[in-house]
Length: 513
Image (cartoon, rainbow, N blue to C red; front, side, top):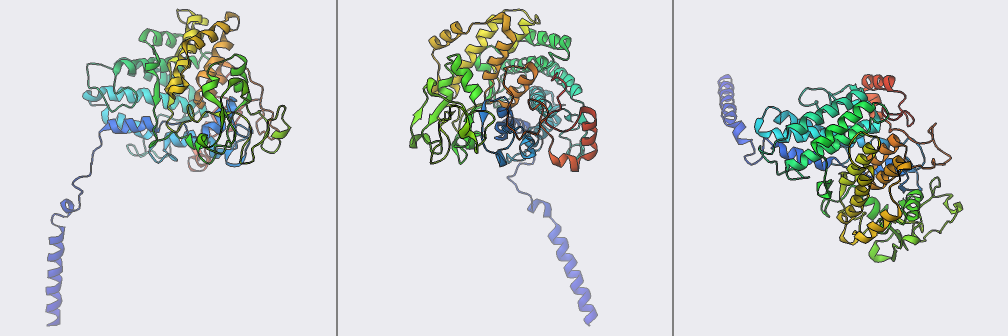
């Protein structure tokens, strides 16, 4: 009898399990959860996550001597001319994996967008917009590091490529130009408008101007290594049509809910630790530049919010932090203005009511930059038009761009005219003048300011004399790879280092001659 009971129990169990399995998938599927995301949402997230982290202040902005901190430790970088891989790796991590910003990186997202839309004729504009923005992202990566994963990047999910090879940086640049040429021409205003686009709501005319303005930027990087190719693509960009006004600026407008990624430096616990650098402040003061007033402020107590201390934004009173000094010896610097008991020094900082607001926009490609690049191209004889006119347009555009930070940062037309009258275009020192203005127009866009400084050699800056430097040369020439690449992706990392040179701050990228 016991055996019969066991058999009956087993039969009942099997029946029960069979019954439970029926409809199992339907019961356990979330009826309201999306299983297929519209690629426009992936694209807009890629735009949003193409961001400059706080660490660009530690390196790029410090190297070009616009912003400076006297502290080492977690802030160590370009201020000391030392290799701090916690900070050098951030562009890499943000763009490839999204590490640090709580999202997937733009490369993963753009690869997914392109994979979903490549064969969909109805989404061809989105496909080509993704190709154009991918060029922007990879230009920053190549300019920062040299050889980087490119052809196999973003393929972990689609191709199971977890350890991508590093492509030759010059080959990448060649492909970037070809991608811009093809993708920008393929944009079609008669096809679907992708209104989820964060920059222009899918406006194809503006996307074409973005594509050709980016083409101009990429081409001008080649000015010292392939002048013929640079000229050819400059002319293609001009013929295609570049930006025509500040309305065409490519930017992210942050909000108090989605604040600027650098806002904590200016408004949080670090606010007494970062200052405008002396060379930048001195240049603006010496030329009576009206941009100094909305950019720079001296706070009586830098550690406090503006509402809790007095502010002085009188241009004549601004003092930049001297390059080469740290918190231990800055009191020995010439003209030392003193420290503040509650924290910080009596040096100029970013104005937290304008350029350092938590909701201040981040600019990527601007009309001002584009006009200044055209000024250099015209000076070199690579395009028609007056270098002087392009120069004037570029300076005027950036001064007018200031009001995008806050209405109080608006520069009067009469002040712009007075500045240009006092600082007219001078053909005898055109390249220095144009690229020094490009340095100002790229303020707070650290990767672009750093790249153009290396390419052009301007502005003329005195090397940082900090005694503890680990570089052999006078200026940092590139950023170093993440240590994780050396251990996890060792074969491809070693191949890149063997091809391009040592993984240090002195090795130059291919266009930096």
